[in-house]
Amino acid sequence: MCRCDVTVNLPAMSPANLQNACRVSIGLRADAFARLLFLGIVLILAAASAADDRLVELTEKVTPSVVHVLTDRGSGSGFVASENLIVTNYHVLRGASSLRAKFTGNVEIECTTVLHKDEARDIAIFRCDTRPELMKPLPISREKPKQGEDVAAYGNPLGFEFSVTRGIVSAIRSAEELNRLELGKEFKGTWIQTD
Image (cartoon, rainbow, N blue to C red; front, side, top):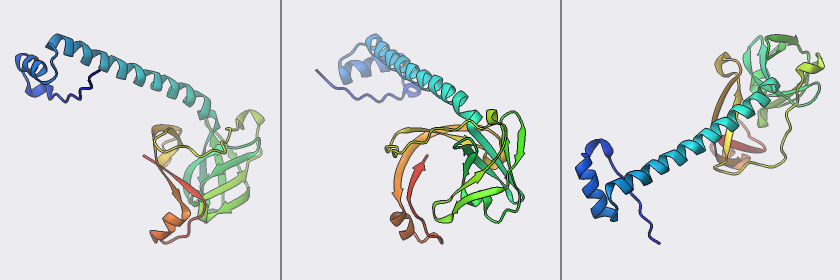
């Protein structure tokens, strides 16, 4: 079995030069190389299409659990964690005196009870008593993701409601590692870095 790594700058090569390069470099005729290249592209597109389909399915399941958190100081993202609890980031609620949750379907509910705030972990939990059909809890995993794993982020960046993006887990960071960076605040817990 032979392993060949091939890098071809197609725009800079004429078909004749490509055929010669393939014969010299890897001993394949250009048409055989083209079939292999085509097969590789098809496999990549098929994998991307399957990943897109999974993301579409996941988005359809997750979006009803995503909440736009609105305060008198700004807004942020949150998610439904149980029949009356919503999780958001601490920085979204910091200094706020009013709190509303906006669900898909443009339904806004006044929420008054903040149950937990943790600045060092940048997490807050608040109670929102509303119609049960609005509160669709997401399951919460107890396992940390692995570096390199695919992830999707749902939320309301800069007020653009119910957005989705995907990326990877680029690192798992400890509080000790982040505190060594002297970022002006104390961190606790484990932090998942995504790109």
